[in-house]
Image (cartoon, rainbow, N blue to C red; front, top):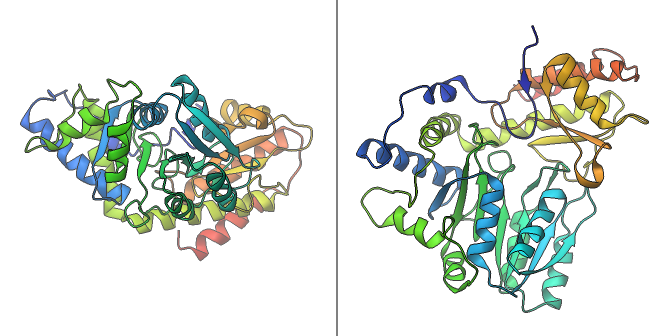
Length: 384
C-alpha cells in the first residue's frame, strides 16, 4: 500500500469534515435553503478577507479571478503596471495582452521580494498608470511581498492596486480594509482547504468606480452583475449557477478556520514555515528565498547535479507525497515544500523525514534524523 499525501502549495489537503459535506444529495441553488448557506459562506469570506466590502464568488479557479480583474478594471490600450516576483506574477502581463492592455512589467529577481521603491520610481515615471497588479505570495518562488507598503505607494501615486492573494490569503497576515487594498482575489484550493473550483474577488468603492469606467468586455465574470445579485435582494445570490457543493464545503471550511481564529491561523503557518526552513537547512540545503520567505511554502535549491524533477518524482512515486517543482526559469533547479491550509506539525515532521530519505535515494547522504530534530525543536518552542 502507498498512502497518498498532498504537501504542495495547492491543491492542499482537505479536512474530513469538509470532504463529507460533498457527499450529501445536491440541492437546488435557487432555494431559501441554499441561499442561507451562501449567505453564511459569504459572511465567512468577509471575515477571512478582513473586509466589510462585498466578496464575489465565481465558479472558476484563481486564473479566472485574475482574468476577471483585467477584464473588469481596464480598457483597451490602457497602460498598467505589473509588479511581479515570479512566474505567476508575470501571468498578469500575459492576461493583459489578451485584452489589448499595455502592461509595463517590473519583475524582481526571482527569489527576492518586489522592491517598493522601484514601484514608486516607475509610477512617478508613468503618471498615466492608474492601476497596479501584483502578488501577495509568489507561489513559484516562495516569496512573500509587502502589500501594505505597496498599497501605500500606489495610492500616493493616485492609482489603485489589485492583489493576487490566491496562495497567500490565510497563510500570511492580510488586512484588506485596514491597508485599504482596492481589489483582492483568491482561490479555493489553497488556504481555504477545499477543492479547486471557486474564485473570490473582494472589491472596495475605488475598485467599483474603476470597474464602471472600464471598457473591456466581460459577461460571465461581470463584476456589475455579481455585485448586483449580492446586494439587490434580502439574501445574497449569484447571477449564474454556482458550484453548489463547493459552496457548501466552503461554508464548513470557513467555520473551522474561524473556530481557530485568523490570528491563530497566521501564527500556525508562520511556525510551520519556520520549522520547515530549519529542517531544510539542517540537511545542508539552501533556501531559494531566504530574505522574504513565504509562510505558505518553502522553496529549496536542488542538490548539485540533481534535477529537482527527480526529487519530486521520488517523493511521489516512492513515498506517495506530492510536492512541487520549479517553474519557468527555475524548472529543474528548485523544489517547493508546502505547509498551507490544513497542515500541522506532524505534516512537517513527515515531510522532512521523507526528504532525508529522498536525498539518500538521489545520492546525497545526510545524517538521518538531523532535519527532523531541527523541526521538532522549533515545533516544541512554538507549542505545535
